[in-house]
Image 1: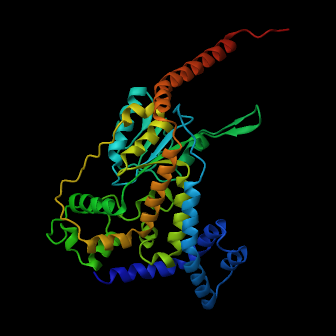
Image 2 (image 1 turned 90 degrees about the vertical axis):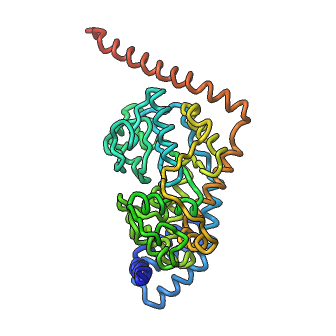
Image 3 (image 1 turned 30 degrees about the horizontal axis):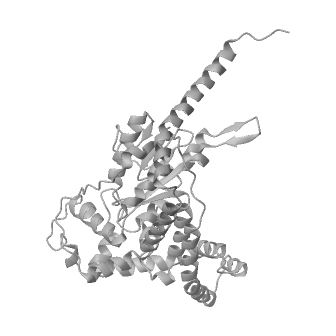
Length: 392
């Protein structure tokens, strides 16, 4: 079992050159490296050049990550969606073990009450093991979908002769996602996905705190759930665009200061997060963001009930085990801290509570008026088609 971490590290080394170019693109975008360095990465590098590039990455990564976080916090507010529809849908990107199952249930209840079409795995006959929306048409999508599923909306893109432009619902899609403290999320995932669902009953493994450092590393980097996923790096799995489990494990297999893939994944994840409304499990006030940005759903999000699905008893985590989990979750911690700061910035931008309540109360009326207007427009168009054309 002790050889497993070495194998993972070897895979990281073999992936180095493949991801180096992407890393330098990300760093160059934040002004931390010159375009000359970017050009160098595209040439065949000698061993000496490779070491120089690694040294540059070690020096630049901390500054670049700080710049990425500040860019997220200061990014423009995401577009508010007060009228969810198939042409302006909501995507809830459900990160595993963040309390998102309760969020999904609340979303389905709200959608049903509003008579909005939804596509949510585990509800209304949609299999739980569903990760792509395909050609499904809905106003709300909620599940373990990966960033990029919005592209499927482009199937319905239409060219508008008036104005000569494309109308693509992909660009009208809204984003909602949820975060949880990384150590708490990893602990929950271990007991539910490995011990309970995988039915591991060996006494040594039923207490996470009893595992040796090499065993903890092996379980989280090599272990897989019934659905073939690991517990590591969930924000990256959902939001970065990286979906290969070996790539995701590699984010935790090397020191953060010398992990090219991690820095690149951070750039992608934080950039995508700019378009989303973040909810944080440990911060119930973050539900105000859902009520403001998606006022039709407000009645379902007065409070967040996190119902623990795990039935397995847990032993307390020692500082030693928490430290080992923190080492595996260095990248996830950066994303979590950035998401909390972004959440706080969005909360600070909200109107006073009184005005917010008035907006929430007016949202259903506005949505109904919009729907009525669409129906009247369709009726008028149908009447015009039935009217005989003048022959003059």
